[in-house]
Image (cartoon, rainbow, N blue to C red):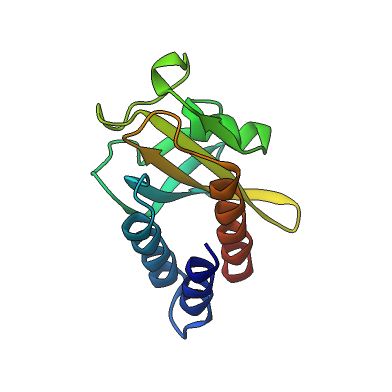
Length: 148
């Protein structure tokens, strides 16, 4: 994981736009972590109580706008807490992006104490996410808050 953190640092330290950096982080995580099958960012859509899809890597999704409270991402926008779903079929409030998705982790991004967005990871494996995943994604979210 340390090698991956160094590569993430390199991306965030590059002289590029935030959008390019976020896209590169999505690609890196998607390519380097075997159980990350969809990696993307959602951000608060202005003053609206909804999330808007940002950079992502993986299958195309219809969920470009997600109202607060709806689905796992919408719940994290309200709860301000990381949400790990070991098996999406057991979740009542799950928005299916792909029939291949078996599990999901969503980690909020905070700037000045405010939840401004989140990183969303879908996996085709049931219950693959560990504390190491949470630590890595929290690290990514801290770096994102520095450039947004």
